[in-house]
Length: 182
Ligand SMILES: CC(C)(COP(=O)(O)OP(=O)(O)OC[C@H]1O[C@@H](n2cnc3c(N)ncnc32)[C@H](O)[C@@H]1OP(=O)(O)O)[C@@H](O)C(=O)NCCC(=O)NCCS
Image 1 (tube, helix red, strand yellow):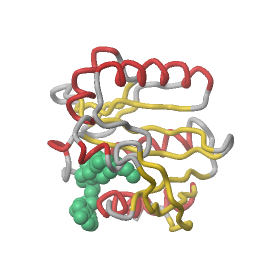
Image 2 (image 1 turned 180 degrees about the vertical axis):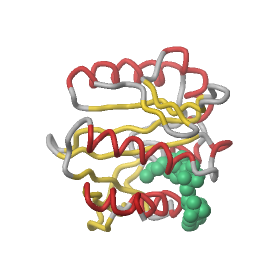
Image 3 (image 1 turned 90 degrees about the horizontal axis):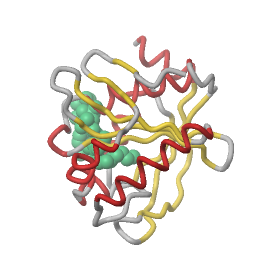
Image 4 (image 1 turned 135 degrees about the horizontal axis):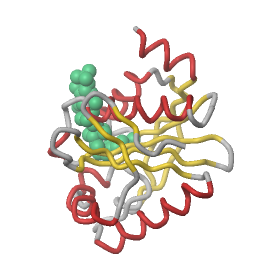
């Protein structure tokens, strides 16, 4: 399996202990954490170290594939994208970037590479995702990837401390490649 994925501007690689300070600084921002379901707030070094260790184990078990998103030209750590097995079968993907890096097309670029990895390397037929009702930017990223609406549910948000209305989407292999080619 390949653990270094490249795009025009980005290198996606396995998260490492030296990423801890950047992870804490960027995901420790409530505006980032409140849009993710499994990220506590406040967020400290121990949380980041625990996440990196858990991801290393999950990669070996084949249950979760997390990548650090870094910028090729200066090596800056921007955020993370990943896939995790949900309900034992289907893989769900997710992504986050630190606020200084928003609105530059990085999330779409990184997520496209992650999805190509899901379909080509993991051989998946479809993947799913979800975004909170008050996160239209993420909804737009998912639309750009070729995702289709697939219902809704209430999903717990650790940072907010309560459940939040969540739009669910599905992305098929065909839907992804067609959108990418368009
Ligand atoms: C959501 C997030 C990943 C987007 O990252 P990004 O790098 O800014 O995304 P991109 O630049 O690739 O694309 C964002 C798109 O949303 C659009 N957008 C931004 N704010 C928007 C809003 N309020 N309403 C609708 N669209 C919006 C942008 O214009 C852009 O679309 P365009 O390329 O057609 O102009 C980033 O804001 C983030 O990390 N947020 C916190 C964590 C999070 O929400 N993760 C996703 C959980 S589902």
